Length: 127
View: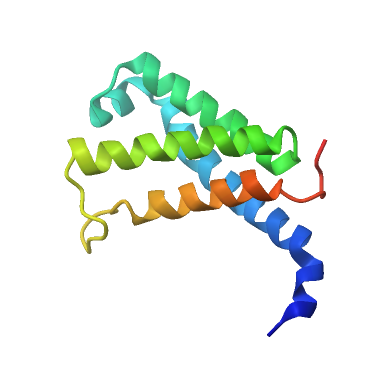
């Protein structure tokens, strides 16, 4: 229907990369700044939370700058599988809820990461 828009695939992937990067930077900062309190909240060791925050932050910077884009997206997809697993299995969070974040947010971040990984993340800014 809109076949002429396919010429803008790279721009679309670039926008997706930036959006995903912004979200992961935002969510990594509390893990890096308040590791102990985040660890208590998550029920995980502080070292694991610090490592997750570092991987999220560095991968997000990679997405934003186009450095090792597919590898960064793979790492973020793996993190999102873990996040969904924790929400579903350990915390018994529903897919969606009015009073809390369900795991639908994690699912869309997983899907976006997979799209970036499989699509190469666009030629814009890729090293």
